[in-house]
Image (spheres, rainbow, N blue to C red):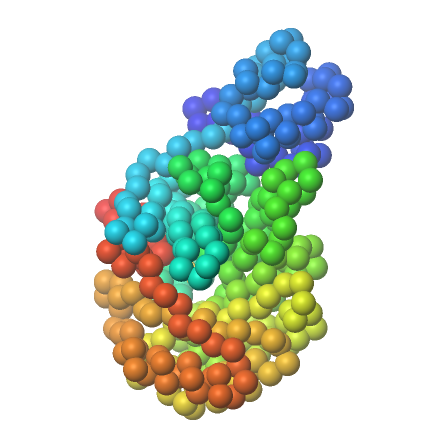
Length: 347
Ligand code: SF4
């Protein structure tokens, strides 16, 4: 719904949903395809711009619907080009999207990291978003609007569902937005340009694997059950061993990629004992490991590993046949940790 009205938002609807709207308004069935074209290829911001619909049909559509584009309400820009945008999702507080340009590997990439929930229920100890509690699922409109409404929208080459919230905890809406990104009537992107990051809710993950061909990133952070349970309460319900057992049943060597996110904490998970257990955990998965520097958050007694230890850990994993890289930190000067900006605004 458009805020303050009872109008439905068209942006975020699938072709089938647009067909339902067209049928309710006694518009011809092909009008749904035209509307999808205007929304997702034409990127129009208002119904009046859908000029191949008859005037009468535009008026009918406007009486109950609007496009549903909403600009960010705040932004901070890093000196390295990274930008954080703040979106007001009505009644559910603020969510963040992060734009990350990257052109130092020969090819120009422009990635947007989107949020799927306002806050999060998962309570990971190291996460600022988790601290804020859960304020609601984003609708497909609110997720896809982030992609359409950042100033760099038409330049984007990749989308990562790695912002606020756990995507598998709002999977219906997330799947709808993946369809909009990849179907011919939508943006027609290759699923190889999309990555969904999850902490590993096995049920949701299985559906994501079966219903899409997007890349998967799993937040592991430690290979040990008891330690992970302390850091990530989800481990009690869905042990990482079971998550990896599920992933071993899928092909990540060809069309899609599996990556493992591993935040490095000094003296906690950065020794070779952890590296060896990680190698065992990942056996048979073709996963690559991304080592991530920890951005301190207020009140957390966790510290990031030093550079030398990270390099040694990376080299050790590589020597054991596990492809591992250290993720370059971006936007350090604009509070890079997820949830920081929204949390600041809430204060
Ligand atoms: S790390 Fe992800 S799943 Fe965990 S609390 Fe933060 S947003 Fe939620």
